[in-house]
Image 1 (tube, rainbow, N blue to C red):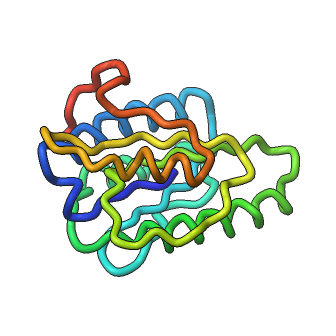
Image 2: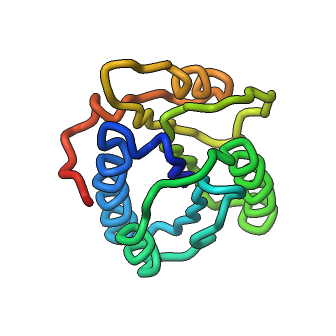
Length: 159
């Protein structure tokens, strides 16, 4: 799971909506005993919040404290996630992998990156009256399924 928590995600309550969705994802992962890897893209570089652990009680604390700020090191995060997935595939070849990306797609540079080697879902959290469509473009480049957060069942914002 890759979460864009750059400064632009604070606009129009986008990060708040994303936190509500993440809370639901964490609950579902816990009930299904799914292992999660969580990478936050904000500031100067991406930061791992957990890699391949069940339950991830620390994810709840992280979610409560999550705020937006700084730049968008999304490309570095995507590259790190790709490397981690390749390593994980070698270590656990029978394990099913999926990638969930939450971003508003507000990026300055658009380098080429190969798609992940597993199903990928990109949730566009760009909100407000003017939408630039960067997340949809990114989903296309990554070969990811695209959904806008507004098209999902309504989640309660999590401040």
